[in-house]
Every structure is written in structure tokens, then in C-alpha cells.
Image (cartoon, rainbow, N blue to C red; front, top):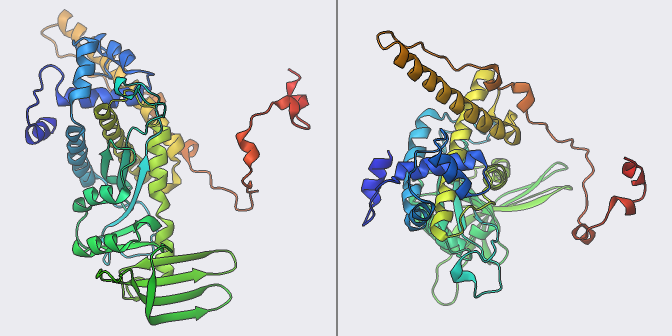
Length: 432
């Protein structure tokens, strides 16, 4: 697959010793090993570690290769790999989604995010006193398959999300349903979505004016109040045309939300369905949290724009692999994938993969020694099935929050540091 991607993507690049497959393998191994630097991982690779490809290049040559290889190669590998994963990834996530797969077979959540600030590590950045945002991301998350469908990385940390939205839009099949936040609720984006024959649900952006055209539904009761209107959004005296949308206001004593959609028929998407669908938008936020915290995308190993892009797409490849494993484990245990805690499961799977890799490497060495001593005999087959490689389901179940928990209010005092010695009632903790 890497050979096919390289042949289709290359312009003037040559593979030489560090091929595209070796670079992808190196990044995946580095992310799983959690080494603090690329130099440490390169030393392990040169020493023959089974987690990394065999690399004989010097550190200078390797870093030069990493900084010169365009992230587009990794992006195309991510796309090709994800396309193959979907063949083995059943649509088993979000089984309680209040929308039939016959009406909308594909539902995606969209959102953008920025990478964490980095210090002035590059020579070109030493002239500035500000920290640098090393890049931006735009993600298309498949709600039913639980996979990252598309990811676009831009080395510009201040790029507008609408520009990144245009880059991921071609990857979405016509007839799909998109769920996003209020930033995307702008007439220019609604027009682009309509041109692609797509449907979208988002929160209402109060900065965009609206004009009521027709009242579709009005409901008032003790549980839920609904206003469902047809409105024209946008438009100006300079000739720009407004967009016809549905404006749905839902509220009760506990919450209030205003949603808009270009699905104009209430029988296709009722207000309650819109509400349940929009709450699933947080799946893409949890996906970003897993990328940054669990898979350590906040820790950049190389701050050059090309290397940052390579790490971003390698992290996405690893994330999709772990999500497919999560779905397979849930199917064997006869539970839903959401019942498994990602915070508990992902580190366990990575640790088990490292153990299994070293066990397989040791088994291969034993087989080679056996073959050397007994060249006429068939080497024994060593099955890698150690108890430490098994996943105990009950240890990785999601612990649901208590609805009656005490919610902490925001306080500016959290930004200031203190000591246990100054907290009332905490001095007993210091008696050690």
C-alpha cells in the first residue's frame, strides 16, 4: 500500500534507504513506545528493536529525511489505510442514534482544532518572542463506525476553519448528514453544503440574521417546548441571496438550544431527533481528546512543519486501528463499544502489542537457532498466547458518572498555586 501511495503522490522525491513504509513504521512505533525523543527511537531502530524498522542512516540523514518528506504522503497512506479498515469495521457505534440508516446511511461530525503551543525550537522562529501554534486540524468523524473518516492538517496554526472545511468536503459522499457547531452555521457554508448535495445540522449562529417565512410546528407542555420555523438566513443589500433553512428552538426549565438544518421536512428529521443527534457531536471532541492526551499528540517530537504533519497522520492511523480493535473486542464480549473506556483500553492494547512484538521476535530467534542445529527438521511452531496478553473486560468498562455529582463552579482562584499546609483540614496529610 505504501508503494502504491508513494508512486501516486511523488513529484521529485526518491525513497532510498528510508522508504515511505519505513517512515510510517517508525512513527507508529515511536507513538506506541512513548519515548521522549526521536533520537532515542532512532537508537533503538539502529540496535535492531522489533518495534522499529531497520535503519542504518545517521541521525542527521534521518532528520533531514523527516523534514523533507511532505505530509501529503502520510495523509494518502492514512486515507488508503482507513478505506481498507472500513471493510472490517461494522457500523456498531452509536447504536441508539435516533436516525435510521436507511434515511441517512452516513452521519459525520465535523470540528477543527489547534495543536498546542511550542517554544522557539526552530532557527527560523528564534527572531520572535511569541510561542508558535505548529498547525491546525480539521476532522470528519464517522459516528456509526467510530472512525476518523478524514483528517486535514494545515501547518498554519491560525488558518480559518472555513478554509480547512473546503479541504475535507470532497471526501464526504453525497446524501450524508453532517453535525457541527455554530461556527459552521454561516450562509457561505450552507451554500457549499447544498452544492455537494449534503445535509447539515448545527447550532444557530446569532451573528447571522434570519427572517421567518413559515411556522411548521409549535409545542408547549411541561416537558418540552418547541418552535419549528422555516427561515431565510443571511442575504444583504449587496446582492447575496439568503438560504432557506429550518430554525428549531427547543427548551424547558433545565436547558435551551437553537438548532438549524437544511432538512426542511420535519417528518424526516423531527425536533427530538435533531436534539438527540446534536448531542452526539461531542464524539468528535472526545476523539480529539484521545488523539492529544492518550496518543500524546500534544507532545511533538519534531517541530518542523513537515514532521508535525507526519506525526498528526500517524497518530490518526493508530487511533483508527485501536477503534477497530475496540469494536472487535466489544463484539466478542457482546457489549456495545461505548461500554468500553477508551482511557483504559487504548493503553492496554498498546502495551499488549509491544509485549506480543517482543514475544514474536524471541520466537523467531528460537526458530532460527533450531533451524541452524537441525537443518533437516521442520522448526516447531511457537504460538504466542500468553495470559498477560488477554484483556479482562470488567477492568476496562466505562464508569458512568453520577448524575447527582457536585459540579464545581468556575473560579479564578484555580489559576493560583498553593500548598497543602495552607488548606484548612489538610495538615493531617502532612504527618508522614
